[in-house]
Length: 467
Image (cartoon, rainbow, N blue to C red; front, top):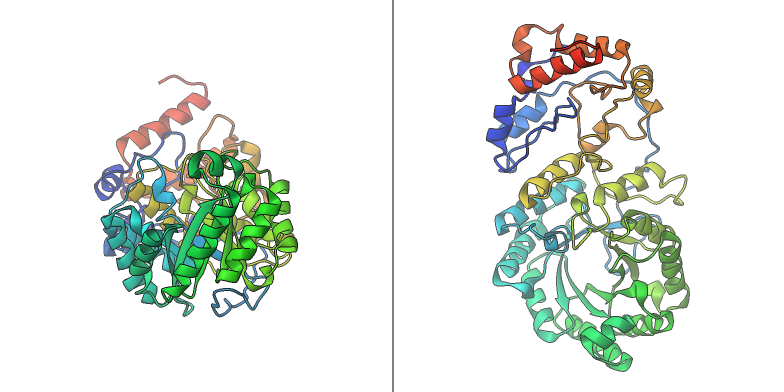
């Protein structure tokens, strides 16, 4: 076993002190993940992260495209395989019940998003409140003029309804960014037009056309339009309204499955049909925005990208209205793992090594805990309890892992992700014993008494003894 510095372990008391709102470690696993404090960035958390040792490992290497991010042009992408990542954690993500964030916290998250390398940050809904306006403005002023690790300056976007007041307010907030965008929307499904808007198709088309034109008249050269509830809208009507907003100057057409009703085959076909039947579609970017009501947001997003969408709207940890949105980490890692061979060569500009930090930051600031079995960022995502799986992991990591935890910026406390459980082999207990007991006593001092007692109790239980 490689030597481990005592500084690379946190005790339960240290974790609680650094994370006053965080829940304690779950008792079902012994896998220690460093969590930074709520004050991002901090020198103490950076030092703790740097202290985690790099362990030798046999890893399964995913095939990753290393193409350079294309130059940003609002209505086109020079490389047809590049997919823009539009993060709406600060807008749709904050609409999760109980997920309200302060302006400072939103600015901190925006700083982390630029490290991730997202193409577009939807910073909020400026007309919703004075606080949201100020938060979006602050993000536009700082993050909208910052340069990320590959020299890219992110687009800063503000949401608005299709009315002049909202659009003007959104522009007043985002115009300080180097690349400002207004995102405006109106519902197009029969149920929304009849019961919510109480307007005819003709009225909705005219509102959409005139408001996109108004946004352009303010000096905004990057305007995104969304036909809300497109997943339940009449196809011919969609083609009509999209054609009109393209003529009015829209640069991105976002197609939302607002209620998460579509299956992947349906949503993929919807994108393909829009691409094939909308006049002028070659002059804009097609985008996806998929809610997770049926648990299909990631699958639908990937289906849309495969069918021709070149922008995907996502949130960190998949937070958002009701059941949430397509998860950034799931969509990005799916494209990273399978984009070259299954998705026709698709790739993104995301630096995936910043995913874990972004996930923890959003979890801490929003107060929305990530479920342990959440793909990519869940506490159990790289943990193995079954003896058969553990045996395979000890021999070669690729037997049961398609992603290396280091790819998302995570380093495990034990190399193979082995955890205690009633289904593990005696041989893997010896591996754990060598890691937990063979070390000099001072290396175990950081573990809380409750964790030490739990480890001992697990050993006794599985050996059929009493305690």
